[in-house]
Length: 357
Image 1 (tube, rainbow, N blue to C red):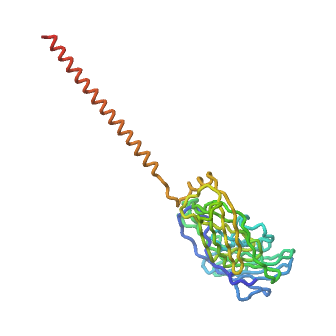
Image 2: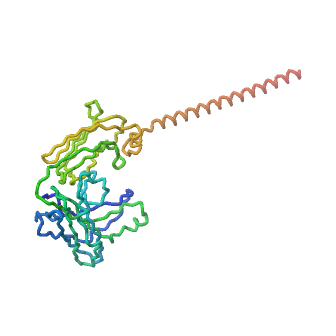
Image 3: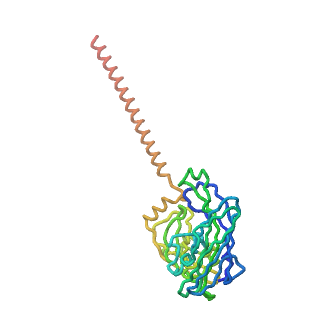
């Protein structure tokens, strides 16, 4: 399947996010070149775009070159393409929940690195081999994923080591795309809406719509128009449009409608979604419920919601007023008692004076 979107990618992968404290990270220490074989479908691209028969085997290679004066140890891995929360296709090792149930042949099970690690001395080049074993079953569409190459010797800064468990570790890797197909037959894209529920992204309230790409083809130039209204009402409470996204074949996409600091409120709602990918359009409506308990839990965790502390101020004010009243009452009573004592003393003096006369 010819797609300009599948390219040899040089990208930075930010992993192991534990806190917001950044640390210095090493730059890429090696170069990569995919050695395209004779059965490459499109020779104008730099990723592997291969056509193989069912059950066929093939080995492909990637040349890695150490451009530094130090030894480099490279760990290769192959991952199946998935879709992240931002509507971007990724080629990292992720949980199986990111795969759709329609995924029959995950690429990572059919493409494996021959070498576990590759050691490159200064200025040295080597080939890394990857064995492809196509499924015996016939299928239309593509299997998609990527080869990930990372320097195992990448060091974390001294500060990061001292603060182990409380840092962000930046890891740099090369990704080489792989697309495998058995036929050139085009697959008609299809999408399903699995579920809608309240959730959070980065400690901010969202309403997640779990979109499913149920076909073995990419959904390119994907746009989503999402609206939420109260069940039985036409008034739009939340609305969001997003474009220029992409979904990997047979993957799920948790599309998040951001509430932008608004509180979740208990009730029954309707999610109305229109999704478009090139000439294809899908329209979904799905009812969902937000419970009081769920709303309270998420609202309490949402860092973008302005907290109302007026009840604290009122309580403190009332407490201070009560204390002042109590002090005033005590002072008045003390003054009255002193006055009574003074009157009693005066009365005693008068009585004594009378008795003396």
